[in-house]
Image (cartoon, rainbow, N blue to C red; front, side, top):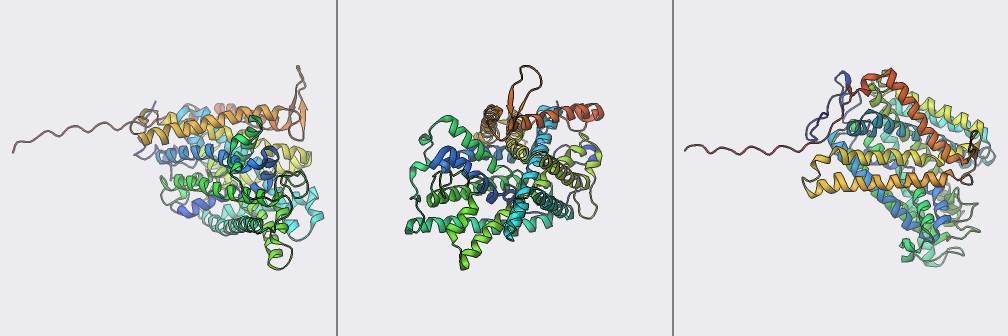
Length: 529
């Protein structure tokens, strides 16, 4: 097995194109732009709107501590990304690192995990962008119409694909504007809600923040805690886009990893403020404006907007801006979801793991052409087909993303430990940041994968279920079948590529490697005076 020293440049890829040599625009992004893209990829406003009600319904007033607990595995895995990127800043991320650590089959499946999760989530993001676009202009009837929301969603995917095709700098500049609006309105919503609670101007059911909200032992059961954390993990997903654009940053080895860690910490602050203030203002009740009300669980922010900001003057404008913010959040995430998928496919093609056409670059825009456009086409096709089948199937497909996320994040954590296994005893820092932290993160996400599979397999979970056509004719939940089915499809495609692209699977284009300890310097022989 080949070895590679993280202090030296990574091995070049096929045709002499190593990290930073695939034709991407190097040095285009700094730390701030990378953090913005990492944050925007998670769609904070949309994530809160769609997930907070579900978490509150499960754990009640302890939703804030669930946000903290969900942050822990993300933070640990972010350190794994940081350490691996310092050794091999390749835009393929999990694909490249998994291949170097465990071999081509593991790496290929890691890349597939990224692609399948991004394609599935694009359908949901496009639908949300379409619905909120109509709500913003008062066309509530169109917002409830599946055909027109699908048309609007497809239009959003095409627009964001075009922006990504134009170039990484335009993408980053647009994200700065959209994310600024998003964060400012979220902070304003949180602070205004708390202000009204402590002034006594909040509606019935409001209450002051209590320390018990941050005590996980107040949660009724381990099962409720696990389900809450599973939902919470999803809303942190996306920060790894900051690492996927590593070859386009000013400092390819340091900036992406720092941006990933900063993004996860900022997300923690945003989510804790939002969940705490929303609970204090609306309460955890199951009726009226309570966050656990099933009628509000799909979108807690729209209802909060009018109550917190009011319906007249500046308050009316802020409430409308809140709706616009959820729209821009989903639209921005649509754009930033295209970026890592296109770059993962680019790296896979550059290393001959998939057809080389996906490595073609635009000579002026310096972006992958086939990979970017292909991501847009695949997303549109999946979205249109799945909505034609049933909106319930679309809902379950979104829930299944957690399996793909846990799979490729855990793989990255374990890849970090294995890649650096020879140097873990070099220093306490190496042991923690290259071994214990990413390893623990991988173990936690593996547990979540197994637990989620158990929960999702229940036919009463989600909106659909399917009965196996062969004995023992089990009835399995649609969320489980979609998630596991997508990963199994990846295995089939990988086996096809193994026969059609044997060089990669023989380790010729991307060999296995590991970090090695630097040899001790030879003592200097004393010289005669």
